[in-house]
Amino acid sequence: MKRPFYSRPKRPNMSKLAVLKLGFGAMVALLVFSAVEGYRIQEQSSRDTAAIYQRFVETGEQLSHMRRLLFSASLIIRDYLFSKEAVRSAALRSELRDMAAQTRQSLQTLEHSIGHRQTGELREKINGFLGTVELTLPWPDKQRAAAGFAFIQSEIAPRRGAVSGVLGELMRVNQQFLETSRQQFAASWRAAATRLSIMLVLCIIIGVVVAHASVGHVSRLEAQSIRRFEEVMQAKEELARLSARLLQVQEDERRRLSRELHDEIGQTLTALRIEISHARDAWLAGSPSLSTRLNEAHFLAERTVNTVRDISLLLRPSLLDDLGLEPALQQQLEDFSRRSGIRCTFEPARLDDTLPDAVKTCVYRAVQEALNNCEKHSGASWVRIRAFEDERSLTVEIEDNGVGLEVNRHGAASGPGLGLIGMRERVAALGGRLTLASAPGEGTKLSLTIPLGDQAGSRTAPVGAETAEN
Ligand SMILES: Nc1ncnc2c1ncn2[C@@H]1O[C@H](COP(=O)(O)OP(=O)(O)O)[C@@H](O)[C@H]1O
Ligand SMILES: [Mg+2]
Image (cartoon, rainbow, N blue to C red; front, side, top):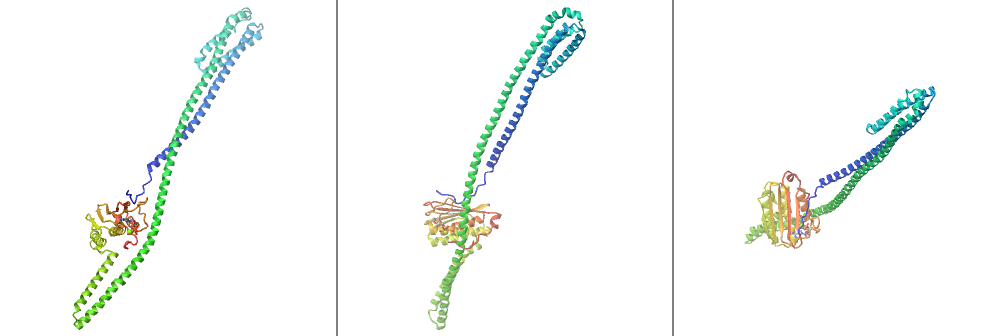
């Protein structure tokens, strides 16, 4: 299967981070809300409990107080009706008035705390009782002695009984109020507790989801950073190998040039000088071998010209500067085809003459390296080169039908060579992208895309850009 050579790193997914932040925020907000709600419920319930008990106790105390007043009033009225001394009677009368006032005051307090609706009957009965008692206050001694006992029996006792009955009923109602309040309070407490539990369960669910998402997110980030680290380490190693290789290539080039100058041009020029001197001797002697000598000298001079051309082409293809990228590529392909015997097809798409110099050099050298690889490694019978350009980028594809190669998981060739790495560095220096698609037995396709715009021309070519590789 063909695999791409280079993949642009993806930007981290920001929306995922925003969702995580939102989840954390919601969880914290729910926790804070639960705590505040819990505190509020606790406060409210202690206030409610205190109020309920206060009302119960106060009402109970007032009812008991009234019962005591009623009991004392009964005793005093009896003493008053049976008293025969004028002074004592006057004191008891005053006590009775005082008692009646206290009872009415107490009734008012009770009305205030439990309401008129509940105390209506009590007021009626108390007024009846006190009214009856107050009837006897203007009685003279004789009338009290004569009718007192019967009056107590027939008028006062039944009314006192009625008041006592209503007081007993109110005490029962007070007890019932406590019970009902307790039940209501328990019900509202249960509802509040359910509300709190729901919020806590919600909080736990959000917490688990957010924790799960965070762990997943962090693991993905960790895996991503490990991958990036590996890529950086590989790039570093490649860079170190590349710089070592650059120095070696430079040294090899110099050695080759010096050998070429010495062995080829030096030897040929020496031979040329000898031939010219032989030709001069032949001319002076009028020998017929003059034309053979001159032919030999011409051949040697031509050979030197060719050698110099080859060397200069290797150093820097003058066609690139003189005629532009397309003719230079054409020339290169013809030379390659002649040299290697591999059939070449070139499909250019009217490349722009004003392409930046760095772009032209990059493409020329990349094609040169790809053709070298084709000849050295692929065993291909044909190679096809296509180039196309739009206003934003230039793309060049070099494809062969050779043995192909194993592409590693970083999308690079698994072999130790530096040609492809150098090619990628060149393309990357121009902000471009190189992809290698290949697999054993499936041929090889190299594509390089270089952006055309301000940055393409302004970028500088990598170090050693003018040195032929491999
Ligand atoms: N067109 C191709 N067909 C088959 N194998 C190739 C091709 N191009 C490159 N390779 C393989 O990739 C390796 C790396 O190539 P390169 O980086 O140019 O280094 P070098 O040419 O110095 O070996 C080569 O050794 C070869 O095994
Ligand atoms: Mg190579």
